[in-house]
Length: 306
Length: 244
Picture 1 (cartoon, rainbow over the protein chains, first blue to last red):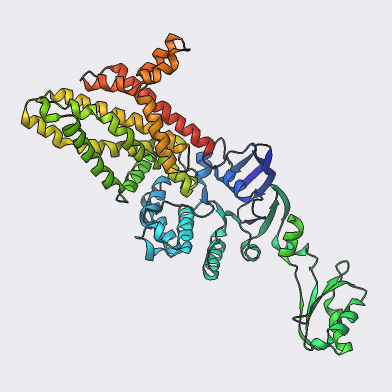
Picture 2: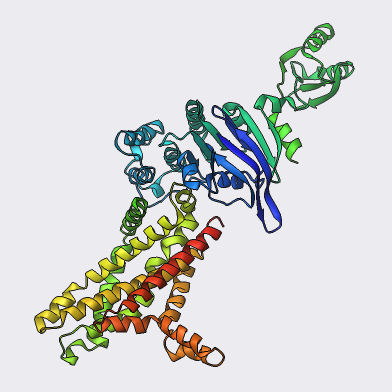
């Protein structure tokens, strides 16, 4: 469980994080979205106890990060931005060092090997971290964060710089682990939010500007319930456009001439699929593809944070 | 306490992960011997003691100790690993003390490797071994004092070269604080008690007192306070600037 109340960080007179309040409960995977410089990393650093808040408070599992930092950090697995580590250490020695500081002894020590297995680090255990590829380094950082099976995980851009396969692996890992944990990940990859998050918070200029499920956010898009049609015969494009635009339930039509594609935006949330399907039949418009859009997160993101 | 030991062990191992540590030990031993035999005229003096050997230590340390301490915190900040360390269940003072102790243990090892010098004087004559032990203790304390200053210098910057140079400058000021070079800057305007206070801060006076074989509790307290103060300052600086 993570709770923040009016969490604020000022540098001089500039509030980098401005009165951020939210609660994340076990079972939630919370995505932190926002443009670069919006305050995502600063917020996470305050939660992890690396930066002291200027005002407001934050707690991890009920332990205040400022007044009871050690208890808060014990319940927390944290992957800092860029997954920093001690480059001259081998993976094995580095993970053992973390395990020592985490007091993983006796039977609990086996969790280190479990983390190694989970992140498939067996092949690089005796290599120094500075010689590893970006993907392996990120995985070492993740192993370090999860080895003590913490109830709260905070991962700052866990998939940044990874190739699509590695991204997929990390997302699967997060989904597997989520269970009864509270997880916060920051990202600016929107597909990631849909893939792993149960809830998304969008931050811009240090403030929370949206807090919703990924589905709810997509529904704010003007493309929500829009219907897109790809025509089989490009020469019908002008005719089809006029016909679709004439419908009373269509608010606007967007045209992509290269793909011969029309996107009809609904007026007042009207349902367009059936209407359009009927229209194309009656007008003899040949379709290659017809589909209903759930909404475009990137468009919502741009509208909210611009 | 266990965390201090864990952090110290990691830090000490990191010295030996690169050839730097061996290079340092080699340079230290070569210079210590050169100074003693050539500049100090060890044989020409015809005395079975290690006074010349120890008298060059402050000047040797002035350049070599900041080279050890420069990486302590500057590197952590440059690579970002400080963010990892400071978000583990570790307190700031455990980290500061653990790293300081690692650097200290390393210099003690360097000093211990000068043992052939001690064998030599015992072979050539019958020196006062108690005085030699006291002088070694003096050197170990002097090294600790320099390291604590170097630790602060390293916490002030992300750049190891800057940490090295600032370390040398600060160490030099403390080394010669009891000499006219520094005192004259205060004599013109400062009250006598302040001049006396600055004079008593100098490393050399305390080091030479111990090197003569007299271990005075006041000299020990001086080193303990000075080291504590600089480590505290390191912690304060890190607390404010760690995330910058």
